[in-house]
Image 1: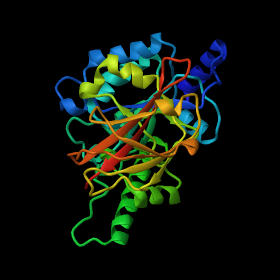
Image 2: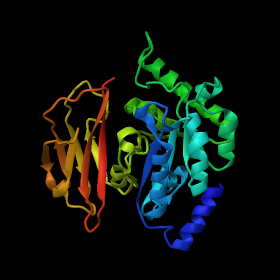
Image 3: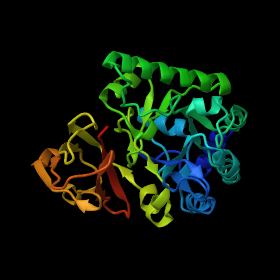
Image 4: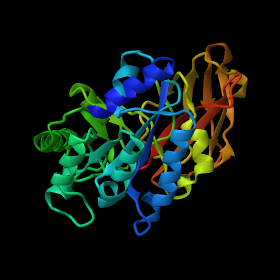
Length: 341
């Protein structure tokens, strides 16, 4: 891959080839001004993001290099970023692709294959995707029909549901491989939704799962549900994005409950924070910008229960936990995803 060779040479020259156990994955959809605001960033704002990465010591890595290095416990350059796009919209090819080429930045496209097969309006064609693939873009899986993966069809039992998802996942992977020659076995969960059964299916098939709950990724991340920062709508603002781009990965385990799926509008969760370059006393957790009460069950072992007192609305929400890094103007960042199907 041409971009990977450029990255290695530049890293050797700058002395940044090794150095960190963490990176950040960012997600975009539309790069346009006439598309749904909730999933859009304007071309001008997108260029501002790329200029900020270029001018502030970031290394933009191909997603496959970031994932495989971190999975194997191999360090990557500090302040590493992987750029991703979901769905396969036309504006990615028409606007983002040439802009990223001008910066020399690699990126990944997660495609829902049926929209491409059907030549759906406002989506790329397989010819355009193949052109990007030939230029070094990582092409990966976003299912066939961009489904709500948690939803069952009428009369469908658990086994039929899992068999249907498995067939759709593998069919999408086959369409990508047939048209581009690539098969990374990376799935970006549509809408960022998953549960333990879906993660188990990915583990059986040796896939990596990529979600949409925010946070940095590191050696100890859950590679069946890696976090990403969506940077669209109000989150496209560069001033707020700067903090996210520079975040560090906690070594944290979610002890209970195991699944993000809940019917509770105020669920508690127990987490275990391993030692790091931060003070546990400075960990703070939030939802809807309000602090969540924290009950330290075992402070010496870093075990804490988040016990919210308010009820949350919507199909999806998350709890965010942060702590300032000692001696740096950076934050550790972790989020807990909740889904009410």
